[in-house]
Structure formats: structure tokens, C-alpha cells
Length: 371
Image 1 (spheres, rainbow, N blue to C red):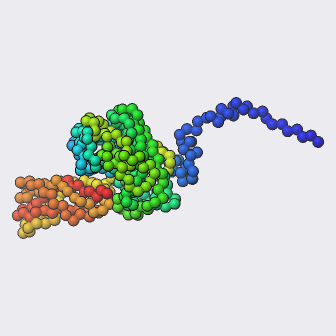
Image 2: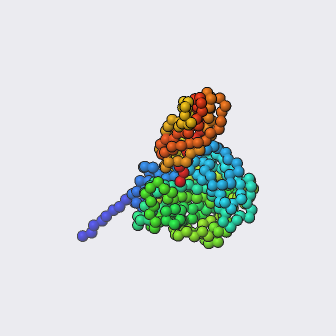
Image 3: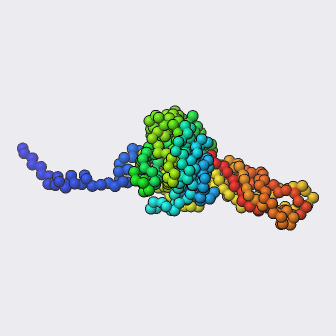
């Protein structure tokens, strides 16, 4: 018995061409995802960006700083780090020069070059995290997850630059990765994936557990060994090997925006948040209050002003400083007065020196609870 089976004709050439159809960046990312959680993150479900003020929009302290030569916050949540032996000086500013989709960037411009960097000199831009905010990366467990770092960068200098992740809870375990600026004065998009770290659990509290660092230059203490591109114990000589010394060239510039640290092996589009939400997140660490308080001090040597609530509860009871004016003698003969007392997570009040007549203090109080 003979059975004949017929099949429809297949155009092999057409089928092969279908295999070449691009799936696009998003499709490739979905195909590369190894777990449902990774696919969940890729389709934009839930929050993705772990860092605050990644679009460099919030600058509560001001928008331009000359002679920025110390360890200082300029853009909120971003600490410009120049170690004590570093002699380079720069102007730090909020720039409107930014890639499409962003309105501002962090700009560094060298005004005093450090051409012979001291052995222990270090230059960089830091962002710190509370341990309780990073429990989801599962660091220090068998289920630890990779992290992907993406950002837009522009510099007048080209060459090799370094980004570092560091675990402050576990003897500064770290992992360093290079990125390359190929064209001077051109915005370039970079993505870097860091492997998971199964050693060193992060504390589940509000302390300084973790940070990332854009290196801007360093002395020989930080070079000489190949970059430590896998997590390991602190190796100072492997932290910035090959890093371009931005501070070595007077007038050199470096800018960054669209900074995003997220779970997984694939960079997703930058997660924009409203300015109001980003500002509120920043105010957990730093905020400025207008303060006005009066007291009738007749018969008293001194008194305390009224309580003023903070904008949002702060990470810890902050340190306080102010530029307040004291008006003794029925609002005449103004005096500068900076005594701030009774500072808590949620409120502050000032001390008013006693006068024969009614006093009034007004001005600005800065509250700092940075990591």
C-alpha cells in the first residue's frame, strides 16, 4: 500500500529573509532576559532607577560654584570628591547643555590644573545609598543580581574613564569598569553591566552602605594594577588604572546626565520622575528652610523661637547652619545670628538672645543629613 503525502510549497528564500528581520533593542533585551523578573523590569513595570536626581535637575545649594576644590555637594545627592592632597580646582555648574530628552547636566570645568597628581590624590563624583534601599539587589546571597549602569557623558578629553561600585559595609569591596569617550565635546551614551556579588550583605538600615563613583583622576596609589572588573576585596591600585586625568588639563570639561543604576543586565530607557518627586527624595538628605520666629523677651535673658517643621522627615537628625538676622529693640539694629537648637528629624527652632524689647529672627536654615 502506498500513501502519498503532499505538503504546500515553501519559499526557502523568503523564510531565510524572515530570520534576518531585526527585533529592535527592546526585542533583543527581552530575548536576552533569563528570568520573568528581568522581563518584568524591561517592560517598565515598577520602579527601575535606584539612584536619586539622575537627570541632574535638583540643585538646592545653588547652580554654580567656583573654586570647587574640596569634598562638597553641589548637585543634590552628588558629591564632588577632591581629596586633601589634590590641588586641582574646578568650577561646578548646572548646565542647560544636555542630550535630547534632558534639560540639564552636571558640568565640571577645570580652572587650576593638577599636572603632577600627588600619589594619594583622588578626584571623582560620588552618589551614596542607604542599605535599606538596596535590599532588592540581594547582595551577599546566592541570589545576588547584576546591576546595569547607564548615562550620557560629554568631555573635551577622549580616552579611558572609570566607574566604580563600592560596598561600604564590607571593608570596601569594589568592582570597577571602564568606559571610553571617543569624540571630544560630543554627547555619548554609555551602558555598563556589573556582575552580581554573592559576598557581603548590605545592612538593612539608613546608613551609608554603598556608592558609585565616576573617577575624574587619581594618583599612582590608584593605578598600576588592571581594573578589578569582578567584585573583590579592596585593591587600591586597581581602582582607576588608565583613567584620564581630567584635572591635568586647564580648561578641560566633563559633563554627565541621565544617570541610571538598575537591576539586571540590560539598560532600559531612563526613568524620568517629576521635579517635585525628585526634589522630595533629595530633601530627605538636605533642605533649606525659611525661618521666622519672634518672642517677647522682656524680663528674660534669652528665649527660644517657635518650632518649624521640616519639609519632609529627614534621614537622621540633621546638622544645621543658618544666615539669620536678629532684630533686637523693636526690629532695629539688625545683627547676624546663627544659633540653631533643638534639631530633629522633623523640626527645628532657633535660639533668640534676650533683649529689653521684642526680638525677631528671620533667615534661611540649611539642614544636612547626607550620608
